[in-house]
Length: 163
Image 1: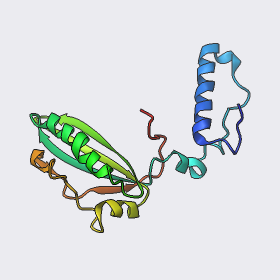
Image 2 (image 1 turned 90 degrees about the vertical axis):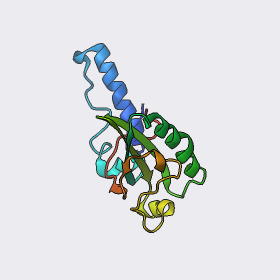
Image 3 (image 1 turned 135 degrees about the vertical axis):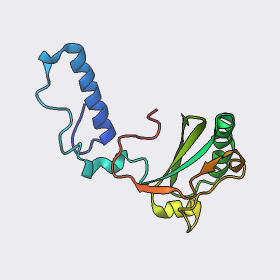
Image 4 (image 1 turned 45 degrees about the horizontal axis):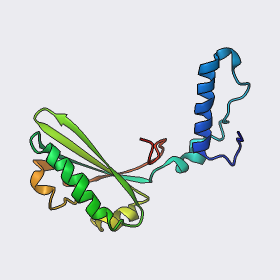
């Protein structure tokens, strides 16, 4: 296996995982003399952008009743999201939908991934912090965030398709 400055961070990660598996199977008496990846290759400053799924994440929360939670999840994942993904704005990378039950309510969190604030504006318009609620989703919500939060991603080991 070749390592060096031309190796991608993903390849280095896989090589390190393979080395760890080998070490676990043969025992610690067969330790490698040198790690598979050097400190420079794992540098956050140099390599983090190759790991980043996007530079900006847009986070929004909405709450519904226990009775409407399955319907809301279905509308989000089968109607609302596919509806705007048909015309993916430039710089949009994808979305995650999270769900958790809290007492008698169910909280939904969406995390959208974008390349930049400009890409968010391509999706949401100049008033990009304002929440955009699909007409099919609104009747199912008890309440929701009026604005979305935008956070700059500085480091991530997650890559799309990892789970």
